[in-house]
Length: 264
Image (cartoon, rainbow, N blue to C red):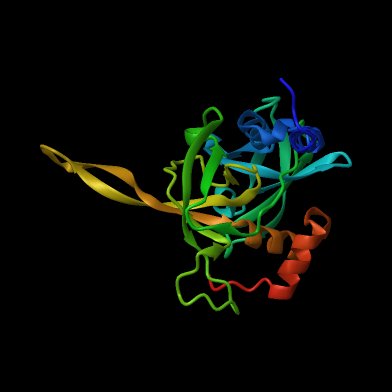
């Protein structure tokens, strides 16, 4: 079969374009995103007087120079009292003592410092779209690392941005992934990029009476109403707490321009 000059030119251009395409990295594949996500996830275990044990989840926001900084939900650690705090990642599963170094109870955020982990630092996505698919990586009921999926079900209101009362893009406020005890502080990640869009704060629940047992109830989460502390709030908290180096410069500049002021 013979090809004319024009067809040969088209074929050559197609081959060249294919050759110039960047090779996919591990993080570009679904499995790569999952590994990167889990490698930035850490469990938090709190032991208080009398052996009382509490468990939560966290994300590694900075890892280097002999230490790792973790961000979690403040209510996992408060009220602040005499307590032992330990953290461990899915990679090594070795518990390391952690030190509470900053708390913002209103934002429900806390920063922990531990000896450097075998872990990855997260990347941030300060904005998302309504309906974006997400993963949540955490440790339900203080058990093994678990991943659940869902989507962004509500966008937060940002002071100064005219959204007509129903924003379609911005910091994440709610997701529809079902969560349980031990998942507070767990990372909420964009499913495609693996970037952090927030951490789990709480979920709305309802009490349901067990049929035939009027005095017995069970508590069930309400789908679509899992509250999230957005990545934007986390970044503001890190900067205001003095950990400016943990905030990527372009994102920090965006937050500074917005004044880090949110309505809730």
